[in-house]
Amino acid sequence: MMSARHFLSLMDCTPEELVSVIRRGTELKDLRDRGVLFEPLKNRVLGMIFEKSSTRTRLSFEAGMIQLGGQAIFLSPRDTQLGRGEPIGDCAIVMSRMLDAVMIRTFGHNTLTEFAANSRVPVINGLSDDLHPCQLLADMQTFLEHRGSIKGKTVAWIGDGNNMCNSYIEAAIQFDFQLRVACPEGYEPNPEFVALAGDRVTIVRDPREAVIGAHLVSTDVWTSMGQEEETAKRLELFAPYQVDRALLDLAAEDVLFMHCLPAHRGEEISLDLLDDPRSVAWDQAENRLHAQKALLEFLVKPAYQPA
Ligand code: CP
Ligand code: NVA
Image (cartoon, rainbow, N blue to C red; front, side, top):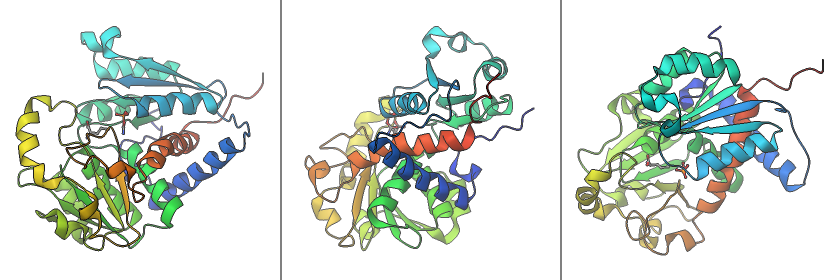
């Protein structure tokens, strides 16, 4: 009964599956642009548990399910029994008997693994303290659309070794690119992911060293959700890691800049960076919708048969 396919990390799929999901994301985008109705998930229901705030993740999953013919239900711990201490495993058993898939945005990654272990339907990681794999589907789809395959290219991650950075490391393994991480001492990505990536990942201190010749430069907020009390310290420590136009000038001529958003202009990026022609942050945000529709199509069983 626990045989459902989950998406808690990029490592839950093979490299071939990941490439086919992001290619499918582009096809689904084209179908929608052409106004073609495509509803393989009619009558299917996705439950979405959000223990942290969200704009893009909630909207893209909710709109995506509706566009695929199904529905999505938003659940907040504030008004479910989850927030009053009902064991996560019990919630998983009950919810997965009513739903066709569950997306969870949470703090500790163990909440996701525990839920998945008790769920009979696919569980999707909508961001944990450790990983943000759905964002990487959108990022990889965006790179593919603008520049073709990322295989063998060089990517620079600038700033905090956070959940996004960890997912970039997994992407380096699965999509086969070189990743250079520039971060302050003590803010490195998870050493287990770094070890798994072997020589595909290098950690440096100087952002300039990381971006030289890079085909993609990406960054994220300096203070992630749940770290708010560290904000002042982080602002000071990360100041040398702001990405601006001059830093991008050191990268490859055809470099792309990505930011998973929300952005803090004047902190991790200069005031004007999202207006630079090298930035594809808006395409990247839109691709959350298309890439996740492809993921839902891949994970969720198709429509019911007529009675
Ligand atoms: N990038 C991203 O996950 O955005 P939200 O926090 O708005 O969902
Ligand atoms: N690293 C950020 C990503 C937000 C989409 C956070 O966890 O808050």
